[in-house]
Every structure is written in structure tokens, then in C-alpha cells.
Image (cartoon, rainbow, N blue to C red; front, side, top):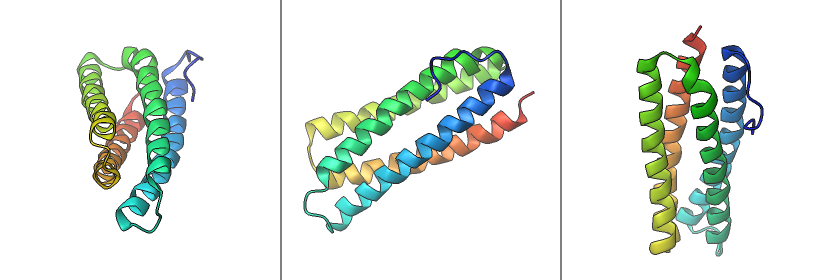
Length: 137
């Protein structure tokens, strides 16, 4: 993910964010595949791949949010900046909730259902953000 390079323009940030969204979408697809396998019971030991996919997604997602907050937020109007930061806070809370539930409850099917809900919400949020990004500047 593009987190080290600090772009000079809004267009560079927009392209980096869209590229990161593409990468995150691939991780969401992988997590969804494992979650559905756990729910369907088709695979005996799908819990570990589910946990691994969730861990990788959440690590990359956190880095993505950090990137947007460092590079995108300063380049957008204050009202939109507040909305972006608020949305990120909610997304972080949901992600931390998944980690908590995974660690505390240990039920792969419950985690899989929660992961699917998170995936659905995150895809919707990313689509809205991409629409807003394209409308900037």
C-alpha cells in the first residue's frame, strides 16, 4: 500500500486511494470466500484461514485509514474532513469489534457472519468514498 510516499497533489492522493481500494477489495473477496466456507461448513478447518484473512485485511485497512488521514484529509474542505474522520472512527470501532469477538468468543461461524456484515458495509463505504473522491477538485 502507498503509505510511505507523501503525494504533492490531490490527484496523486486520489489515485493512491483508488489503488488502495482495489487492493482492499481483493482482500475483502478473500475474506468473504473464507467466511462463506465457514458458514457453509464445506471445509472442516476453515477457521484459521478466516482468521488469517481477517488479520491481513484489518492490518492493511488500518494502514489505509492512516494514509487517508495523513494525505487526503488535509486536502479536502473542513466539513468533508470531519465526515471522513468520523467515518474512519466508526470503521475502526467495527474492525476492533471483529478482533475482540474473534479473540473472546472463538466461534468461527459467528465471526464469519460478522465478517460478512463488515465486508458489506466496507464495500458500500468505499464505493461512496470513491464517488466523493472523483467529485473533488
